[in-house]
Image (cartoon, rainbow, N blue to C red; front, side, top):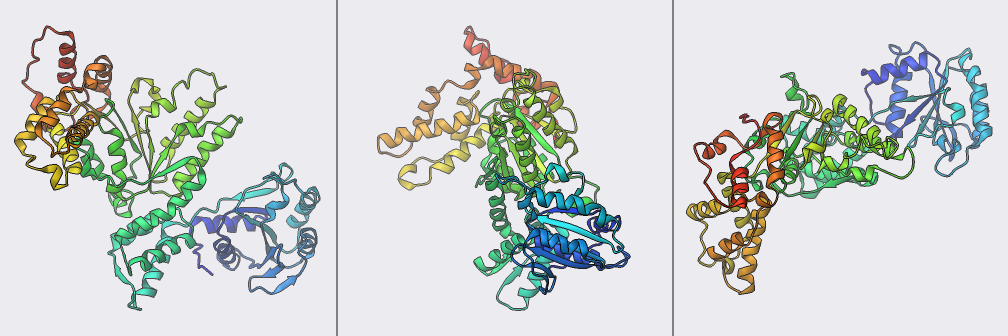
Length: 557
């Protein structure tokens, strides 16, 4: 049986409820063994509870047994078992497993005879000469309305970080001396591995560590990925959140160095080492700006930098046609994200999900869900980092941007020349690798400078597409790539800065006083001192305005 410490507040709370003669307690958990271990530890600890109590279990397959498996009463019928409990006159705790099947729910009809019997027993249990309690343990929470005032729900949470680390330490100790498994972990890496497993049951965590050991005969910090795969199963079962697996790295994102530095400084801030500085886990970040400039890309790359699971919340999946279901879906999504914390919760184009919350066209469902989400963001204590992206920030209500919801709001503008060079370099090197494609083409600083100048006003997504278009030119003629292919693709592209010049200007005006630029000061300096070229054409005037009137406060992190 797994040893469970009762020194923490969970054990003390359980002891208080037992001493206060609460007749019925309800544990909602899959971890029967761990729950029974906690109950047994409390029931036999004279410092917590004055009168030690015997513990018995009832299951429909065995009847009533003690913890060693000896039968006390072989009646498998629930009514007969309750009659035995009612007459038992010694200090005791009776654990009834899977008793929820008699309470109804999930298409089952409640057994009103059993419910009536439980109500009849309340007074007798409270007034019994010997202290006596009944504890229900079930993976599902099903409470008939008739018993809601008599049953107390006991919050039996998933294992703590300390409990999981104890399991990891025991496994390391057991396998280290065998010589079959190579352990390559320092204390900080051990902490990262245990933190990654929080949100799993002890059995799931033990399975994840065991799998990591046997896959390559060693246990190191890279086995965090194995633990995350186990967590992926939890997310798949919710049907609301999506577990995003991405091989993107921060090096694959060109530019945005200010935002990268900000994220880098908060890496590992959910570990105990951050507590020495009195630091809380970061709440989240809102990234707004011009479409196609890398907001979603950098969201995906945070997962690899921080080595945390990335969950995508689709607000559309929250809403349901059944009254009350949408609110429950939001609760499930939040609970799932917290269950596997530390984690990253990504909400892409958040303004679309929460648009129209003040319209009242859905009887206030959108407003209630939005309020529920805001309250959680303000008060959450679990290390769930929320990263939200938005193209049209004006559609978001002002209460979302209030300090305390997000740690910072970043504005992603059209890339500067230096950033365009980085984006070009990333996409060209990523796609052009084969010698027959490269030919005599050499990616020099001079070529990158030339292409960066010609792509002024292009967003990152447009730069990626022009690289692809250039490769199609070479592919269609079955030859190696040429500089002229890139130049032709540039000439054939009408950038977003021209087609949506007014919208981009509006976004920049908003960001000038409300957001921090994701581009560092040194990259912006290339624009200082430059004058707008005069032009007689309206379209050129639009692109000039977009190029030089950049948005966002320039703060260096």
